[in-house]
Image (tube, rainbow, N blue to C red; front, side):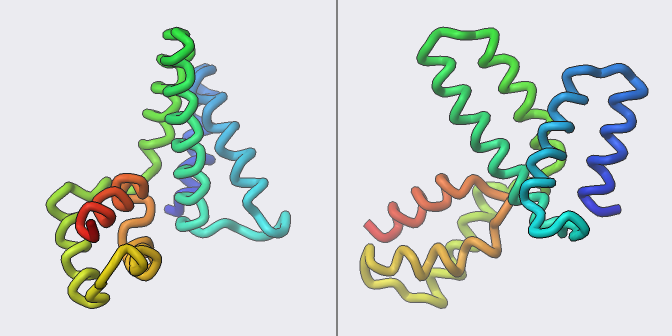
Length: 147
């Protein structure tokens, strides 16, 4: 079953169960998926759906930070619940150990000499960890190793 099919099934399930909150979140994702399509008849691959989900999660995490600064705990909780629902569709996250092994492997292949090699490293690492690790964390780890 593709990720798109799973999301459609969960949409139907949320309707049957009258789960208004989950239904709203899934509808937002479906809308974002429609916008990500290049043509209306095209089907999104699982990688495309993961990219859409990653962007949605990132947006909500940024919103959480802003709402915390503004003292809006009600909206913080709402966004946290949305992130939880969206994260359920993401592939299993990499552990710190697995992430470090991937970085070790890429560093052995690329053999970076300075901060200027950051782009080359990110280009090599991204396909290996996309959707399974927070890219800002990956970037931070790479900068630490280069520094």
